[in-house]
Image (cartoon, rainbow, N blue to C red; front, side):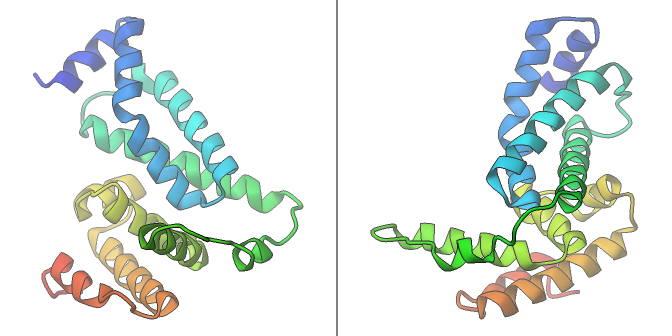
Length: 189
């Protein structure tokens, strides 16, 4: 039995230390997924907290049919998508000016690249952005992404391909990302 499996069993029996350990172990990836899907930091933090609470509430019903990490990714993805729906219902001003006025000053090229990718990712449609985040941020396999999104593997491949193409166009293919795309998929789309 894996460490996660033991922690889950203990957590399901009410061991608060096991629940805490599971949340700490999965916090960074839940936060990363929420931040890349939602983009806006404050809203992404809300989604992260909602996902963590949902994990705790749903722990008794985790049945082990999927890997625990896949189950966690699904909860994080759903929390982020729910947050996006809430955001769309709010009356908020357009944030486009925020990206125009970003001053990077003495920031390193890595920070510049991160900002470019975040801004570009925000422009990619949600269904493609979610697939990209789960593949490239969460480092999940196509089959796991299919389970999380409840779509066929072919749909995952299609969304990744289209999302990568849009990101490449938005970023102007400055860093050879098309080559990495082909390496990631084995040259198959």
